[in-house]
Amino acid sequence: MARIRGDGSSGKGAVMLSAHLDTVKAPKENWEEAGWKHDPFGAEIDEEDGCIYGRGTIDMKNMAAMSAAVLLFIARSGIKLTRDLIFAAVADEENVNSAYGAKYLLENHSDLIACDVVFTEVGGFTMFLNEKRCVPVMISEKGASTIRVTSRGMGGHGSTFHKHNPIAKISEVCLKVANNRLPHRVTNSCRTTFEGLAQFVPWPTSQAFKLLLSPRWHSWVLDYLLTEDQYKSLGPLLFNVSNPVIVQAGEAMNQIPSAAYVDLDTRTLPGVTSAEVEEELKNLIGREKFEPTMKPDGSETPPELIMETLRCAPGFEQDPTDLHLAEVLEVIARVVSDLDNGTPIIPNLLPGHTDCTFYMQLHSKPACFGFSPVFMPPGVSFASLFHGTNERIPVHGFKWGMAILMQTVTELCGGVQPKTAL
Ligand SMILES: [Zn+2]
Image: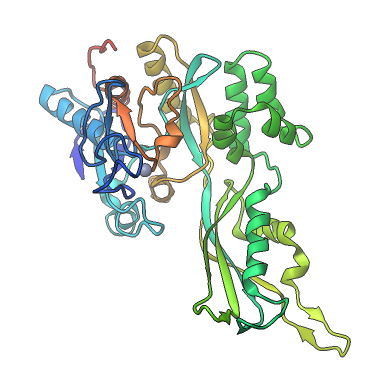
């Protein structure tokens, strides 16, 4: 944790820049076979594309480096701030439980992170639509649940014949969940996102984005009009999303197992409870499979499948017109537009989740933003670099982000700094 004290004259709580320092895994050896162009731990700059390659370059050591630089610059240049500026470099974000990072700070040192505004990952990057660019800023996030479906069938010797193999039942569950979408739901944050995007792109794309909000037409637009990239990044904003990720069954080559389960990584829209998403999943898989059946003699046969929620972290939704949020969004919008030729920002819903899940629970009720600015050239999908092979960041894009973050933070903290040309 680092803090630069302001003189308090703004009467506002601190601005906090937060970056997690951990990353997902990457191969230490034989990285070429794994498809990497450069050593994932080499931090090499590629001469052809001008990008620095390495695990964590975009998720999210870029923000850690920028935040440290912003604080150093302000401290060294003696700019006077009117409110505190905090930098939290945290651990353990990439773990499902995130017990030792932002969550730990929230539970044990909330005084250190009490603030009014948080900037962290996934937002602030350039997105190109029909050759024009915009900068999404995340203000809402989906939640995450782990839902387990278990099938208890009939075990037996591998040489026998029967129709109650639990692996077969769980395979049917996997196929249904992986190949179908859950029901269409339009939340406020989803409406804000698509209406924002529609304003910015020309017809007919604008019309397509508006139709994504229609119960009648969304499927058609999703399946036939969107590019694969758009489908991947925009589709999840309209649904709860569930994916089979872990399947467990069987121990011996000559034995039919008596049980099998699948864990579904389930991402819920803000405001959706785990009970509601369980209902959606049961409807998709087949309700009758989760209910006991009555035999002719009046006795009950236990249900074929059991569903349980093992873990559930709800999402959150912030209203961009809320004064507290609007004030910060206005500064971001002005800085981005000033430093990048009128580029607009679009308040957005994030299909994943970040440490904001924890910061949102602070007593100081901060406005939380996914805002780690970076310029991504057209053709490079920001989303595919996260946790991906060949994770990288354009050096020019990093400098672009640095200038925008510096200006935004100094304006929010009341410091006066000459504008930096990009
Ligand atoms: Zn991250």
